[in-house]
Length: 303
View (cartoon, one colour):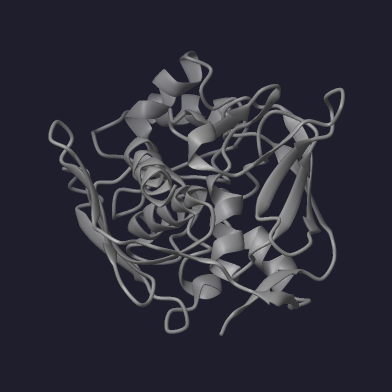
């Protein structure tokens, strides 16, 4: 029998939101048994709060936003992924702005802080989400598939394919207790294609982005002038393209880091099912929309 777990103490994180650029302070706090994961907006009157559940998903444009009444929090997937990967059932997340800080673009800052102290084991057994039938979502236009098959244990298998000569087809997997989330998944950072950056910046979609918190994939030929303009936008003295086709702002932790980050996102989005799944999760070309729609389908199935 697995018992519920929470944090041993509170942990504070600060920084800009990736898409809004707004500076936020966010604190992860211990919580009693059966609390689940709850967000509290400390900057709003009455401190409105909500549980991290799929029915509250309000936007999936390049990140996952959940909203219940006045309480709205954007880019929740990385912190939810970290809490799931660490095996945390109960936590209260206090935040004083609309978007979770992007930090380094991964879940590593969370797991490093929490792992240093270990977890508090609680008195009640963990409540698993067990499926009675398979849940499958397919987007024929994009080729995206997310499938959850009933199983005695949780596992994830994911494949990405961006029709890209740089990224190519990549796969990633996570099986709790046999794959170390802290080392194998948490450090993997978000990524973006170079040709998307200018569009995203012009449309105010990555106000808090910089080349320290994202892998930049250079899929198409670009001029020295384009690279220098991007370096100036991000206040960097000089940037170059490495031999594999990535901007040399950061080094990859793994050759398949892009797939591993998509796995990180999927784990976080599916935590919106409301707890720990007992399922075999298979995903192809997944993204926040299909991930959260799968979580909504599970919520409907278990009601």
